[in-house]
Length: 84
Image (cartoon, rainbow, N blue to C red; front, side):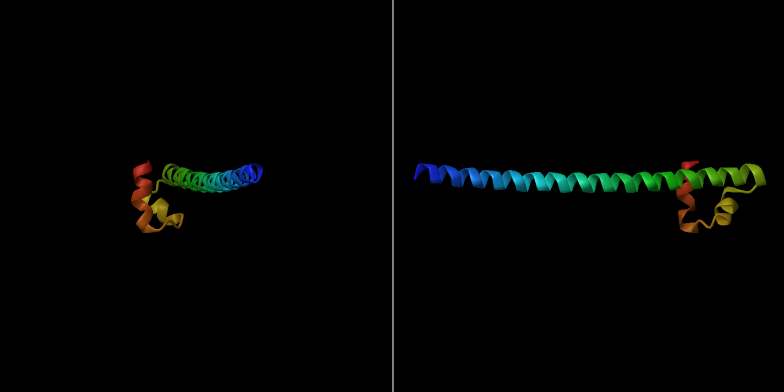
């Protein structure tokens, strides 16, 4: 009888550990995905900012005209102006 109770308790603890580890694994995967997405977005922003600056320098465009030339939505102009 004691062995059965011990086995049941061990099984329950193992199930809890497995569930906990699955949760950690899922959390880690989500964190990695979010980090990758954030890194890609940051890279895009930096590239657009560099393109804006190049158009301003090489073609003498204003920041707004450079952003228009690149097809950046006007609602995002302030975002890039703050990054300069």
